[in-house]
Image 1 (cartoon, chains in turn cyan, brown):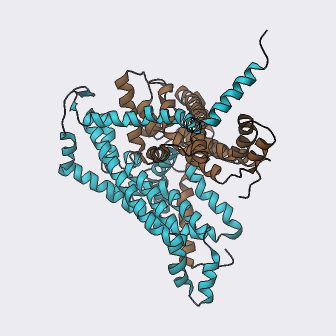
Image 2 (cartoon, rainbow over the protein chains, first blue to last red):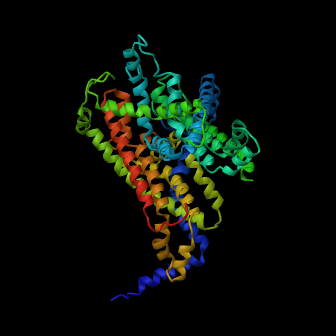
Length: 301
Length: 265
């Protein structure tokens, strides 16, 4: 016969112990997830870094040794061009998303009864499979696709316009994929905007354009900056879009990484390419933190 | 849109944006019912492509793998992420800032880097690839997102109920299960929802860490997209779209209808 009180006492003792050791309590909450990230996120990245400094194995994998040649290879014209294209594509994509996304977010906040629906229609693609959405682009743009079939039937063109496997297709795919990431943060910062400030500006005689430029726009800057980061980072690291919509013509750093681990079997170079990509992302985050701290101060006053 | 007149060009631009966001998907869905194999010309209504899906063992297996992986990864990452969020919201501890900073790294790391680095680790350690390696990878990239979502909820949470429970004699664990968890529920559900969708949708990371015979649905769909252009892809895409939409709506309901949640947002 066991003492029915025993488990209760044990539980009480454990709770008491944690109560008197708050550090241990906090760390016991952090550790399970923290360990998972250490072992399955940080450790792999570190192993990858060590691989980027090793010699290439013949059948994939690596050989022992130390070299920085894989990083130096990025100084080749070919790879500098790919790097440049990646940064330019990501920048152009962010700019287009901003030009389309800001007015969209603005209209949603002014949406009245339609607001909920308009917002839902922006959130929906955000939850929709990226792969399916990329396929939708192929379906529209290929030679026998929706757009060309329509144009041919209407007699507007005599032969299909080549859209798929062009830089245009990749850019359209990137914008299509990441536009919601721009709209949502801008929307939430416009939504928080204090309308009494706009009224004050109106009372003081500022016209609508001026009100927008001097009040609305500066106050929504945190959303704009966050949106730009949320678009720019995945655009930098994208490889699925250029892989499926760009064919072999529009190669980005992400495609270089992927190729080294599949067809080219050059793991050290692929690892080095990954770290070049990480460096670009880190650079973007640093710029973001700089700009955010600069932009948020006037908004908080 | 009645209390403020917006210039016509803005309305036109935004209408264009909405069409751009939704027309491709609508066309994709419509043509999953088209009775023509090669052309994108409407030749009649059919459910043939959906019947074809049921005949394809790889799709059914992929769906099964996706559900197993999605559910396992969601449960694990939601539990781990919620615990971490609790620590960050409620405790001041040594190394806290480091943990916070570290949590953001997986969010900004390109998927392809996450996938390949894990592949390297698995190969180096001789871990066989399969569903388990996919689950491990998915949890690794989901945890941070769950933490962010749950943390946002925790920060807006009223702690009076917890204190009341403790004063009335409930111990910490009872208070946690009876008060904190129900109050936090919408946040936990949103976090889990995000985790499941990301896991269910992921192609890039999965493609690297999956073994033969453990392909998830996106991996199968990718192969289909690569290989041919028959309308079965439209059909499977439609199924995936409908499933995610239903899931989003159900999760929204689940996250909302908890009577205990009486805070002011």
